[in-house]
Amino acid sequence: MEKKQFQAESKRLLEMMINSIYTQKEIFLRELISNSSDAIDKIYYRALTDDNLTFDPDNYYIKVSVDKGNRTLTLTDTGIGMTREELENNLGVIAKSGSLAFKKENEAKDGHDIIGQFGVGFYSAFMVADRVTVTSRALGEELAYRWESDGADGYIIEPAEKAEVGTEIVLNIKNNTEEESYDEFLEDYRLRSIIKKYSDFIRYPIKMDTTVRTPKEGAEGEFDERVEEEQVNSMVPIWRKNKSELTDADYENFYAEKHYGFDKPLSHVHINADGAVVYRSILFIPETPPFDFYSREYEKGLELYANGVLIMNKCADLLPDYFSFVKGMVDSESLSLNISREMLQHDRQLKMIAKNIESKIKSQLKSMQKDDREKYDKFFEAFGRQLKYGVYSDYGTHKDALQDLLMFYSSTEKKLVTLDEYVSRMPEEQKYIYYAAGASHTRIEKLPQTEMVADKGYEILYFTDDIDEFAVKMLMSYKEKEFRSVSSGDLGIEESEEDKQDETETEGSKELFEYMKERLSGKVSNVRASKRLRSHPVCLSTDGEVSIEMEKILSMMPD
Ligand code: ADP
Ligand code: MG
Image (cartoon, rainbow, N blue to C red; front, side):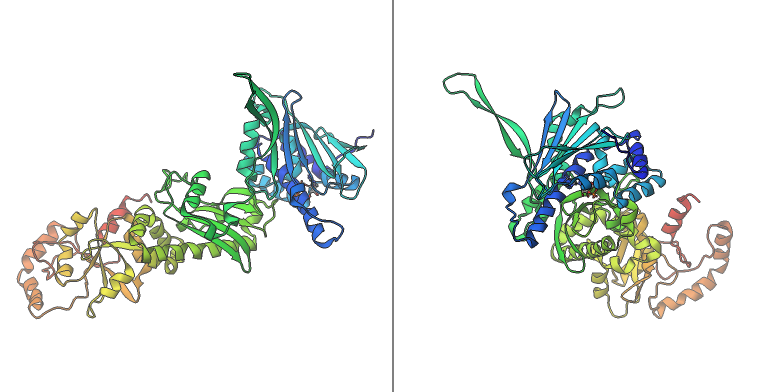
């Protein structure tokens, strides 16, 4: 029989794939199962419009079986099957989108994880198999055909026999080499875990054989063994269920099962969007930051599913940096399985989903802040810094979105308060929102600069985080009230008659002050009498934009 050559483009792609080292060979199974699922879908959709065809879900399944001795892994589905022409066209040419995605990704040169990020479909089978045999009988056909290929060389197609409509794919699993072992793909438990990991939510049952042992009657210690089919996937993902059917424990289980974190989530959002963009999503706000959260190693992102099939573990484009702590998943019917990371970035649907998700997270946090302050305190303790960075980053473009989520410790309330709460408590004559920066609350309380403001009965926000003052500088004001450091030269506090004497006092001690200025030359720009001191003899103040604390931080930063 004549061996046909793959089309040039396909051939090159195949060679590249086979000769590259992939970190995630296991995804071939996801690809094959999703093809099977698509093939069953096709019958389902045809039945919707064809009166001669009925779709009884019980008759449709995908089966995975292994023969260790012969080193084969077999996938059988009861899908729509392929005609001779379809075998030729679909398996002899790589889908345009797939190859395009592959090339783009490869140009990016970080291509070691190409397959793990998006599918190149059927061809991924050659990552683990040195020969692939596809026997298929199309719906409405009597005859079946066999397609067989041992990789880059090409393929043959010949007539074959098959009792049922559908497709059977036999993979001859590669022999182990010195660098690589392929045995795992013949291990029952390993295959099950791969299926659970990537294909748990496929809408049709994925079956595997399991050996059931029952004690033999009348024969102590002996067992009857019988092989039964077992469904490996759970089929119904939690996010497709109704919120009303689910308890907090269900969500917590899901959080743990998915390894989103070892903590219990503080709160979750379950979204079922049916508007301009259709998607479902479950989002979690964790209780504690992962150990690497404030390091460069931390990778933000949500799991991304295209119609129930996992296509990306951490889709970063779904989350803004300031919400990088959020865990969870998105499932959308509007996305293609073969989409590359690069293409995703420009995907309109995905952008809309990301926008939508951002506002959901925001309102979730807002209502937590309003209705369950204890929880919000915990949240803010863990991730508040991230929000403050968010205010400061990107030239303050997100400050409006984030300012209401911020909290700072208050001198009068002795707890974290929101800016809104602060402003609503301000006496009419108070001009500014006052803050004091320092290493700790006790250190700040001892600052002479706080005395005058505190004496007036005004509330002071304590800034103990490096980022606090930077964030506030970016905000500039809140509800038209400007922020003012207590160490600033102008505190905007009305001078009383007796305070006015200070000018004359400065005059009177002119010589002393001149002397002090000289002694401290280069360290201070001026020395004068002050009205803001109560119990302290002296304090430092700044006239410029930058406070003393900020100067300290800035001087520590590398240039
Ligand atoms: P994609 O799934 O993105 O189209 P694949 O490389 O995974 O790309 O598959 C190529 C094509 O081969 C599919 O579009 C489908 O037409 C056909 N195909 C693959 N597997 C099956 C199957 N199990 N049953 C029917 N058709 C299949
Ligand atoms: Mg596919």
